[in-house]
Image (tube, rainbow, N blue to C red; front, top):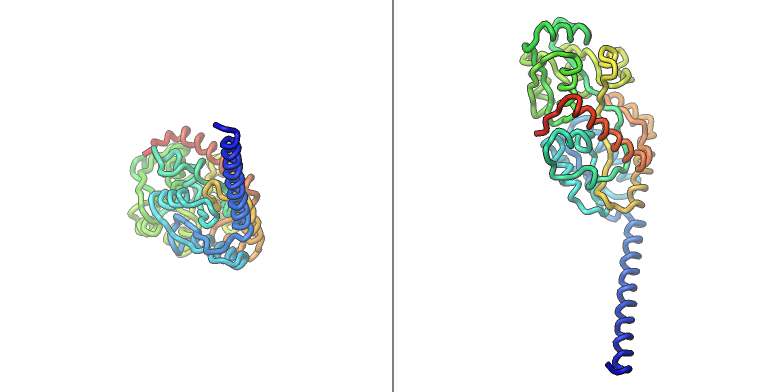
Length: 336
């Protein structure tokens, strides 16, 4: 190659390099601009909970307030099914551009890892936390009024005397409810038969009618039946008595150390720009400081301590996964 030809080749390569650098700078500038301007179009909010439920109410309330704060619609999409797997899979496969968020129940991020042999998503790899929205969603153990027990200790004694004769209803869409029943059986030393339902409504109806003797369900779904006298609530699964149900004992008062509550986190696909995550977190935390909203949540059986930081939310979820590993080993959960 002659010197002139060599020089021409060098200049061509230099132009190519400069062109590539310019394109990269333009792309970086466009990304920075898109993050700064976010959101410029509606944001999709996926929840695996059914429309009309207490959690759906919280999700829509948060979405409406985010829309007012950020100037774009937050459109809630209820993708129900398979212990939250349908919604979690859709969220994990969405673009990580800030236009899809996942209102995730605890089971989709923790217990599903131990309840199922395989999942079509990896909650540890595919999703990252924005904020903890609900950190206290306890369950209530209730019985049909014909069951001769006025408290949990009396019920355990009764269940031991009726070994193999009692059944309890549980909504299988709530992974935590299913595990709570199995854990209660083991720690209380009783043998109740699990009757699975695809909806809490049918489970409640059957227990109120006496087709099952016991039900484990959330506060919002249980409360109307208990108030009407169709069920007798014996204990709640939180570590301490719930603010709006302070006369109801905890299960831990009878079985020390026994506590299990549901919680909900706002998640995004991994790789979503940190600036968007931080902005979402700030707005959600501001929303959760509204005393009126907090009281409305308590009235339907859901508690919040505020959003925390994204880092704290991810650390909380990591610790919960470790706790579930211990629970799964203790109960001997058989993955399905």
